[in-house]
Image 1: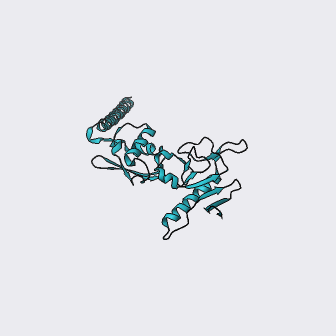
Image 2: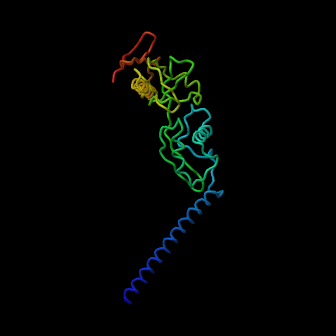
Length: 240
C-alpha cells in the first residue's frame, strides 16, 4: 500500500514538474515574441521603404528610377512607408505583386540597417499596332505592361505587332488572354509566340556585332503563322 502511494506521489510530482516546464517554455516563447516586436519598433532597425537598395537598379527607360519604382511597389502592396529590417521576409510577396517584377531573386540584410533586393525586371518588347488609343505594351511572356512607366521614345521604338486576336479584360501584370467560340478566356498562344519572337529579335539586334535590318512590324494570324516585316513590301515568314 505504501509502495503504491509513493508511486502516486512520484507520478504527481513528475506531472507537476512537466506542467511547470511547459509554463516556463510558454512564458519564454511569449517573452521572445514581445522582445522581437519591441526590437522592430526601435529606431536603429527602422528603414524608410524608399531607402531599400535595388540590384540592379531599374532600367534607364523606367520613368522616375529607383525612387518611383519603390514607391509604386509600396503603393501596390499597401506597405507602410517605414518598415523594420527584421521584417524583410515580408518584402518578397510585396515585390512579387508589382507588374514590373518578373522574379524576386533575393532579399538580403546588411548591417546596420540596409536591405538589398535583387530583382529580374520585366522588359517591354513590343507594342500594339491596331489599338492606337490604348497603347498595349507587352513583355516576352505576353504580359501587359503600363506604358506610362516607360520613356515614350522607347515605346515608340518598340516592334509594332498586328494580330487578329482581341484581348479579354487586359490588366497590367496579366498575360494577354483571348476567348474564342464562347469558351473561357485563356492565354493566347499566338500572342505568346509573337512576344517570344519579338524578344528574340530584340536581343539579336542588341547583341549583333554589325548592323541588322530594322523590324518594321510583326504580323500574326489565327493559323499560327507569323510574318516579320522588314520593309513596306518585304515580309518574311517565321517558322519555329
